[in-house]
Structure formats: C-alpha cells, structure tokens
Image (cartoon, chains in turn cyan, blue):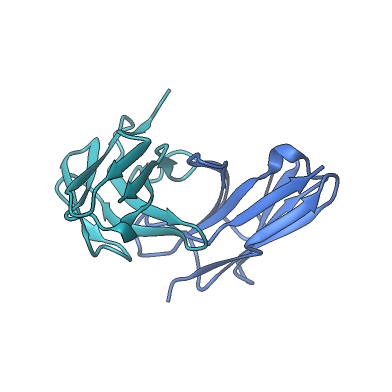
Length: 115
Length: 112
C-alpha cells in the first residue's frame, strides 16, 4: 500500500559528491515537493514541481537542483554535497485539485549524512 | 509574508492531563492541516479543516479552526503515552497553488 516511495532511508556521502535522491509516487499526482527537515527549523521547501518538466524554487534551493522527466518521479540532486546538507529529506505529492482529505502524501524520508 | 507559527515547541505532560497546541497564520488561508510525526518516521495526516468553526475529533485529539483569529488549536484530552510524537500544522494560502506552509512543530512527550 506504499504510495510515495523514497529510494533510500539512510545515505552517507562524502563532501563534494553528487547525490541523487529519488521519489516515486503511484497516485498519478501532478504536484510533487521536496522538503528538508532540521531540528528546530521545521520543514523547509527546497523545490517543487506542478507537472512533468516543470520546476519551481522553494525557500532554500541553493545547492540543489531537481528533475521531473516523468509524472511519477521527482528527483532531488545535490550538485556537490556539503556537510550543511546533512538532514532528513522528505518528498510529498498531492493532486492538482487536492482530491482526498489528507493533503500531502509523504514518503518515508531519507536521512542523509554528508561526511 | 506568508507565515505559520506554532507553539509551544516542546511540551512535556503527564498522562491523564489536558493540553492545547496553537497554530497561528499570517493571512487568509484556504485549508489547514494537522500532521503527526513519530521519531524517525514520516508525517501522517490527522485532520484537515476547511472553514471557520470547523471541528474534527479522533480519539483524544480534537482540532478546531477560527479563521477570523487565524488560529487553529489541537486539543489533547487525557493524554496517554502513545500520543508522544511531533505535531505539525500546515496551511495553504490563496494563489499559492498547492504549496503547504508548515509550522515548526510541537514535540510532545507524555510522561507516565
């Protein structure tokens, strides 16, 4: 019954590496979002996408990029990982017309550590 | 500025007691959501509140919305240990698409 799947629960990467975080949803949702979650800071929006090949910057896009080549997949890319990107990354999706009562459906999260 | 404020940040309460978490937002909203997050887990939807005066209840949790005050509350009745988690409110605003604006979360610990 998994609906939003993030490819890795835990990742450890080295400073300077290019990192790919994958998110796949099977609900045919148009809108997808990437957040990072840090203690005391809540959830901060990195990038979002309203549809295939569309992307919009969120509040903290620096150091990140995204790709949305297919409707079901939204990838977050850390161009050159740095230690301040150590965080929990959450993917979420929602239909354009917000069908369903629960708002976003979240993935299980990826805890990334950059060493 | 579109802003959502939540308090308290941390809440430690004894089993059996009642308490309220507050969520304020800066301007007219579309919808307001409450989520729960267990340690190391993702967020799960609890409630969505659509209009002024809306009230939703499930078990020991009750959420309400006052759009005139731009305030939602999550009331916990007779707390039990299983309610220990972090609770987030999230708001959508007009003309911002489906972008959710989150509060900073309230970390609730229920002590036996």
